[in-house]
Length: 148
Image (cartoon, rainbow, N blue to C red; front, side):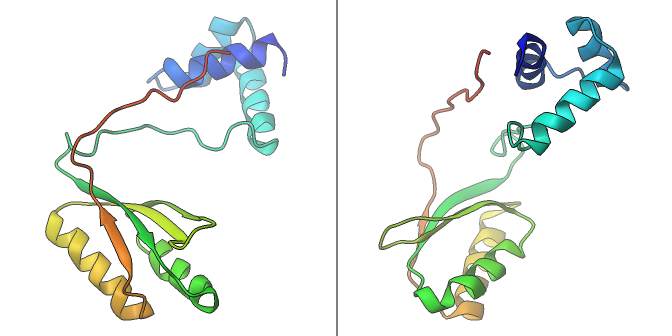
């Protein structure tokens, strides 16, 4: 990565232009063309430096409810369990941990009832009933941007 890549990453993290041609604006700020920005962003995506470009919303302020769940899933059921969880469009993260509770996922829903129905459905479809529902009592927002 060169200095221009770093500058692009800083802009994408903290000041993404909400314009019809955002990469043109990024290019102007970096002294390069829109096409060059797009090439560089694509290369960084291909290299795994950038995983995703998208907005981050405060679900609570939008009236949504969310939770972090941890499930104790027998090894032979992991693939099916993960497939059932991931089939829901409201699941934002799902990952395996080397722990007694080996599958962790986060889910957001329009209401507490919708969230509870989803968790009940997972238990019914998979037979896995040991799922911890760890809804936040208090939120601490940490800025996960990095000054490059």
